[in-house]
Image (cartoon, helix red, strand yellow):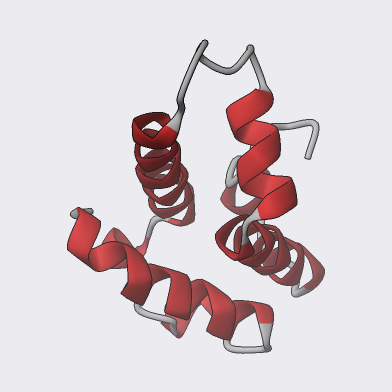
Length: 100
């Protein structure tokens, strides 16, 4: 997924979080895991460009993404919606790190 596709992919995840069937949402490649990892990578790379001073610690970027951005909240909400709709474990669980 290219950087230009990130906003559209987030829109699809938002739709899933709000009730759209994830199997018909049109996610790029149809792969929930790859889409979520690409979105997170995009945000983390952009954030690293903004860091002034020492680089963040181990899980600081992950915490920032999931706890402080709308994109992270959208990924978590879509993950919960897929889980709650009966999606198979590997489809939703690996959309985020396991402890999420």
